[in-house]
Length: 259
Image (tube, rainbow, N blue to C red; front, top):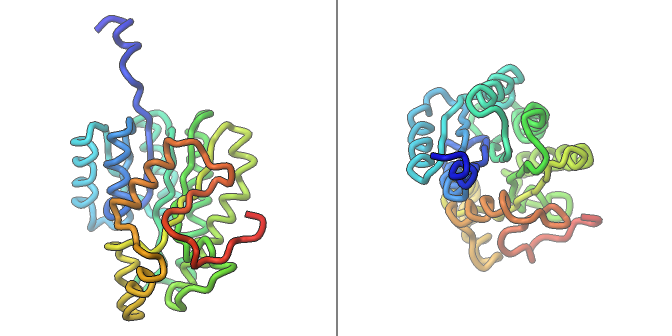
């Protein structure tokens, strides 16, 4: 290949998606591979390595390079090891997608939701920013139940998670001026309950009929693939003026003053 031909080869971008060994994160990884991204797959549970490796293969089949890194995002040393792996393999990042969340796991510590949904989000962002050049982007994935929790009550079973995720969103938004100064974009993608996710299934078991009630109120609920398509779009389309991409109907949620 001549130097001129090499200049014509599209340069692929480098993405890290937290919590991407299954569900929305995994589907988004595959979609991004088709949009010119190579993708780092992140997972927490050492028992899920085969599942993560399967997503890596799907990304490769879709045209991207990929590798998986196990990292507990609530642990600072684990996050630093994750970033070292990114630097070692690719030198940096063009997209950080903060998809990992939790707090409803059986046996979790009382403050685990805040540790993961607020503190870990900030920790990962701060560790990743030195790896990102101007023109890079950060995407934070959340739910309407969390995004609008200050104005619209949610199910009691989900409220601790919702409040911790909103706390994480607020902490990230507070860093927007610093990100902008570095030329790094920031987008929040918020969706309703998503058909087929573990969270939706847990909530429906805890409160039978909850999924049907939300489906009726919203008209319809997005499934995992549809929501992943919206997240992938947020990675490449212009950043909204309010930095928020609301997916699906939000008429059931009271607006947030000043946002």
